[in-house]
Amino acid sequence: MLYIDTSVLLVYTLTQTVEKDRYPATEALFARLTAGALSGATSFYALHEVHVFAIDNAPDFPTGAAFGKTALETILALPLQILPFVSRTEGRLHARRFTALRDSSDVPHAIAASVYQCEAIVAYDDHFRAISHLIPYKTPEDYLQ
Image (cartoon, rainbow, N blue to C red; front, side, top):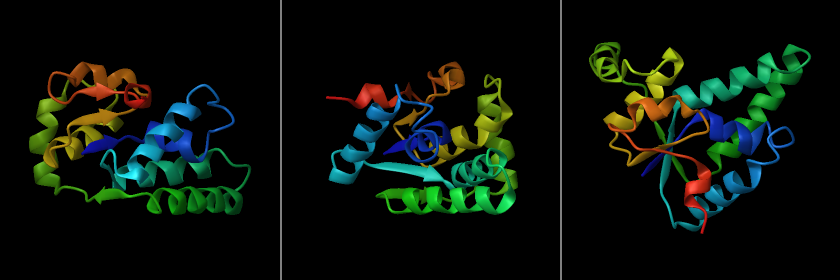
C-alpha cells in the first residue's frame, strides 16, 4: 500500500491548472489506483491539509470551504484507505524516528505511513528524501508505465 501525501492530493484536486506539468502523472497514478493495479492510503491529516489549503487560497471563507469540500469529495471517491490519527503518546514515540524531516508538518504523514506499514510515501515534497532509508520516497512519475 502506498501512502499518498497532501502534495499529490492537491495536484489532483485543487492545483491542476497551476501544476500542469505534474497533473498528468498524478492523474495516471490515481487511474492505476482506481483500476486496482496499486493500492493506496492517505490520512485524516492529509484531508485536513487539503481543506485548509482550499480555505487559505480562496478569496473568502464560503468559497474556500466549498472548494475544500469538493476536493474532499473527490478524494473520498477514490479507492484509498483513510488512515486514522495515532494517539498523542504513539505519535510522540514514532516522531523520534523522523527527526531528519525539516518540516514538522511532514512528520504526521511519515508516522501514518510507518505505523500502517506503507511501502512508500508518494509525494512532491522532497523533504521525504531525508527519511527514504526508513520509508521509500516516490513521486507519481515513478509509477508511470
